[in-house]
Image (cartoon, rainbow, N blue to C red; front, side, top):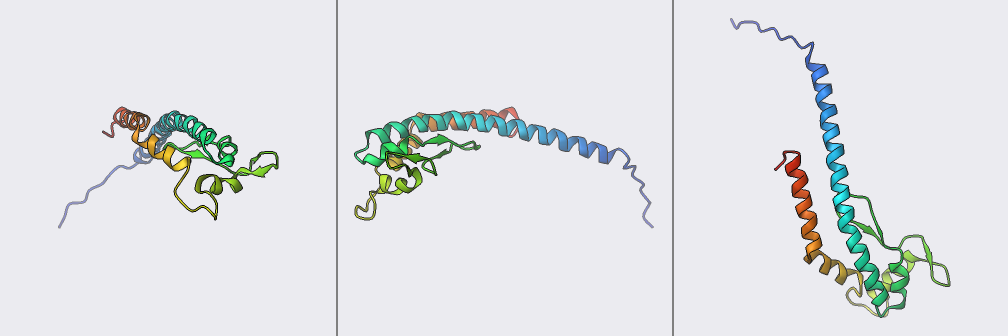
Length: 144
């Protein structure tokens, strides 16, 4: 017959609750650091997108480029277009976005200013700087 084992669990639940708080705190801090690194990287992309939009041969591109903003995320992200009214006709930038990038229904083709700029940015040193920052954060919290 197996021996009976008695376990005292009085301190286990408070310990687990305490560990959840530590874990949540670490997660919150790591997320904040990831968002800061992503925002720094995305800010560089915003600058490049605005310059590309201003230099584009598509007249609406400069209007849409004025709406590029950094989005708060743990990966570099930007928002382009949206409901903001631009131009002398006060058209929503989101309505102009597709035509400024793709040329509209009459001019099928690849991206004119957004896609090439993003591809160039991804291949450049700014994206590498984000990966270095992520690795540093992971090392700081003992994941790597």
